[in-house]
Image (tube, rainbow, N blue to C red; front, top):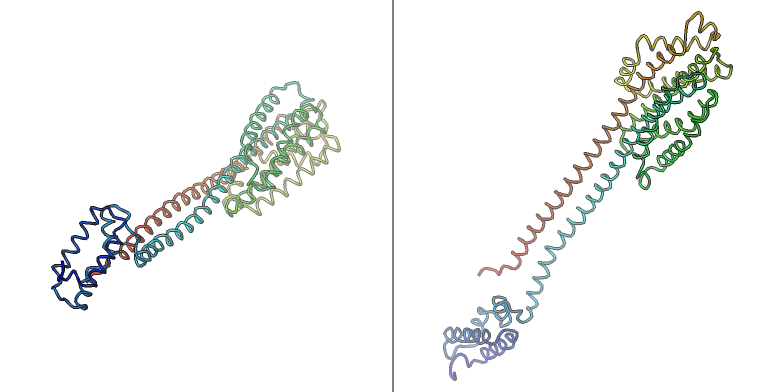
Length: 419
């Protein structure tokens, strides 16, 4: 090839550099590439071409390293190392894709983590609302059992008490089942109140062995019913929801008012069931205290209830039997037992029926408030579930969008410039 353009020193240096760049290529491919380059230069350059013309032709052809790299990419061969400029493009591409993807992933993970925590918290609220409903039912069954137990020694017919105890046992089983899992993550006060209630249930058998009215009433009230009401009145603590907490706050004095009314039923029912009927001075004092506390609790209920709840109570706890029970309680505090059973013709069955109507009406209102608590807890759970699902979907969508945008930007960075 003597005397041709291929003998030019710049061409010889270029071909020598090409040989070194093609060391990573298969021999056949390297030979074909060099033959193509040689033929192209032989056609493009005239014999005796000057340095400027040769340099321009070689520049348009591209560097030997780039030609070898392109040939290696086309064949699937790893080829020689990329030149520094190509490596910089690769790093820029990696940064363009990785940085926004990592940022989106971290932000999405933080949001999802927060929503997961809210979802778990709403589950605990819903659990406590369900448990509280079971505890309120248990409280009502315990009140019925206590009031019948107060007259146990004075009555030969023990059928109603037996049925009341069976109802209490069923309600207690429901509470124990719902209490499972209440521990870590729940408000500490709620956990303590629940433990006190469960401890009270363990001594219920011993309480049932007490037959005297003066002894059995405080045992039920202090050891079991009291802890149950305490749990219910604090069931909304730590929920962070104003509506649910407001309903629990309204429910609390109503549960206490109902219990004080039930205590009056127990005391006077036991006194009227005795033969002859007798109301001991200590029992009269307890009756007066229960009536006074009932009125105070009723005042607290009206103070915390909204207009709708006040109207619900007024419309529900009403009627002839309710009026008679109130009048009978007032008389029992002010007239001797002989006059109560003689002139006013009050007997155990009448008193128990009239007072039970008032208690039943009060429980109807309480149960509606419990239903509001349960419904609100369910709504909070549903909201947390929807939020978690939506956040997960949006985060995944944003990650995919970031990847698509980054890939498009990356392609623009690696696309060769147009001449």
